[in-house]
Length: 83
Image: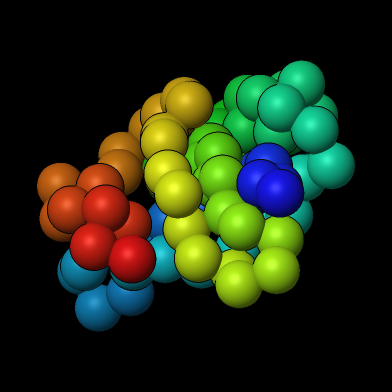
């Protein structure tokens, strides 16, 4: 069975480079999108991410960025697709 997981990935500048901050879990898609908007007002950048994974094996079926706020590193989407 597949399980949907949502989280927010904020970004901050560290030594003049945009780096991922602590990931924020979200309960639902609606919650993730609302929190993404809210967090996007204070974070330099935030991506709202939806992951579909197999409940038993943990194998990821798909990863999508549902929303972007602010500045997101170009390599971020390449990195999550490689997971």
